[in-house]
Length: 368
Image (cartoon, rainbow, N blue to C red; front, side):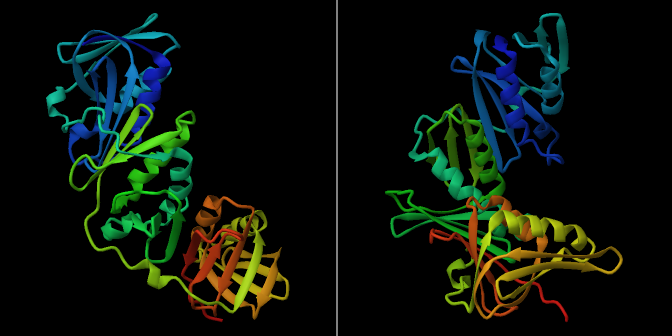
């Protein structure tokens, strides 16, 4: 292989694919990226066996070929190079790089040892506006479980319902549901790993000039996203997802209108004092004030009054502060509604004028 490629383009592709490289790979070769030529471009590919990501970059190709090399080593070296053209070649099982006065030789592994990598999807599939997908996916993906002991809950459910796509994620303690106007002609009922969807969100946010992305099912139990010059292909999760519609409360006896930033600052402050007490913070709702408190005997206590508009009985509720912080950090609007029915029933958070989204957090049972 002998190619010439701009340093900034090569680095962009390497930094993107490096997010897929596992920290503790099942196979040593998974610590590598595959750098190869593909239809007049350079293709950088990484995989963790669940998700594979490829980035195609324009380059001047004099000789076809490819090699697997350490993702971290290659990324670190290319990031140290000055801007300009990098000559990349393969000789005697090693990758040779040269840019101005910089030269490096990185030992590699035959590309045949890398898990089979796909070519750029010819059938791009269904087109969806990038901003719409990012908005929907980012409001639910954070609520999925990270515990691999519950594989079903590590996914985001995407299902077609009443001509709309519904995104849902839960880890058993919280639930996010977003109903979108994204119209899919064919039936759609999948469970996609939240980590893979998170990578799709990141790539979409980086590719700001790309208006549409494409979703297709290149094979059974696989889903592909094409975003600009990047394709992310992931295995789908197989199994019966919980019926999340049954979890959603249909009534409440207290409704509170919050300014998001005011509540977020209060929760951040209380979370500092809740670290050594299982992250538990309390909300006391009375009159037109919500008092947010945290108390850890060995650390201290914190109390913040948050102005709010309260309609109903009021009361007390305790939450895991981490769940509240993650929700508020992903909530896009300036105001939010909170609905509750007693201290032990789920708390519901939703936008003021948008019925397409809601977030549920299970309360923590506390004494006193």
